[in-house]
Image (cartoon, rainbow, N blue to C red; front, side, top):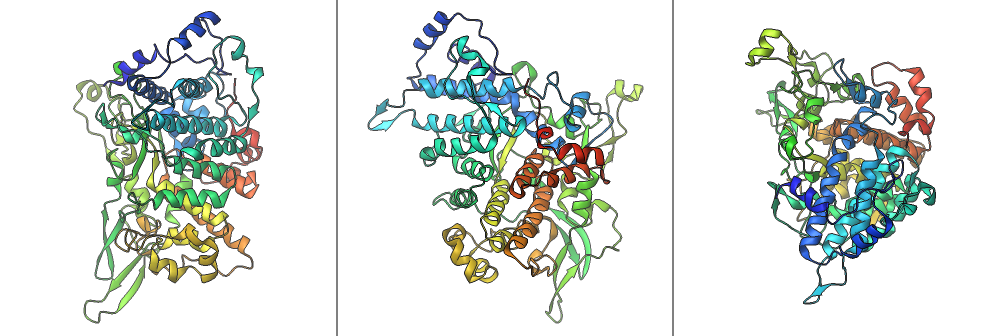
Length: 571
């Protein structure tokens, strides 16, 4: 089933957007709207399928900007001279109403369609005691909550409504309260919790995509909402329960990029980490927005043209790793465990800062060099480009966007582990949070590295089955790029005077781990927003972003110290 065909079907069953800033006037007369609604109750399986896929189609319009708004305003990405003016405005916090990445209307289009579905799906219809549309209802509830969260973190306070707008009168923006992220998070925690254990529908393969990966896991979304609402213990529980759900446990796995030793010498890099990003079917991918492969079919993703060299951009990539990202990566310590083949004695090897490397990007944490391999000389057989010389002589390959017009990933399993650590730490369990980074939470590590006092206090929040979470499938996140981290005595929580100090220390480590693991994925600006909120300190975000070029931009720092400047104008 082509998504473009779903669009045409949706035109007959979903109302157009009537939105705020985003809310525009409806061209239909009120009487026509009433007739439309009465004639389009969602009471057959086809109705709900087409309506649900129509919402997925609306999600396509916000897919690329979900990544770009979160990434370009952070500290891990720098734009090149080839970047479009629109992208430059996003990165420089000057995007106005004319910028295509600043369009609240597209978010409200999703919300309007969700509201319509939720108001009209016949949730009482049952066959053999089974509520037919309960599964789709839960999916749409999650889409609406996610979309409102995106609006709030991008626009600050936004008009809020949960009923479909059916008349011109109802499209008046002044009728609706403006709500901020904390209010919205609290609202949707209550709204979603009753649906957290509803199974999602399975439509099989649609357009060669696994339809189950279109959906947003409610447990994970509830964890996110609790983080934004500063309900940390609840956030940790939602993430934990998602990871440990019986019959569908989610160990992190052991994929990494590491140095191969030749005796006690660091010889060469071995990489099975990049494989996590080569396919949307990867076990790491929880949710993606499916995109079209050809523009004449609908909305395609242009993220590859931003982050990589392609034929479409004449090999001129527009975004690359920032100086700040490089510094975070280089400042990590790579550790290897070496066993002498003669004496069988074990020793911990630390890569010296003086080690001569052919590729300096491989100093410290190796994930950056895995995601951004060294630039290569561009080779093209295109006669026009070759004769005109109108192409970049150097090519960049960003492996997270190596597939042309690929689905846009919005949740990976690693995101859940990072936010689980964030929630544990803020809930008052810094040892457990740090263990997520350094050791991995499985039975022996929990007992060995977390104090009895903290284990007792955390209780079931750090309970993991010894049969499904083991040494073979559970490692510390930091080991993905820094080797045998469990042996690194320098990577540890120091003796600090108060637990509050320990929480801040661990949060700094989590912040760095977010950078090392999720760079280019569109999370960074929002992560910094949330951590600043935890600390009640806007300067935390301001200082990080102001230093993305390697030195502090004092004007940008002062600008971002004002939280109002974090948001796009809602016009």
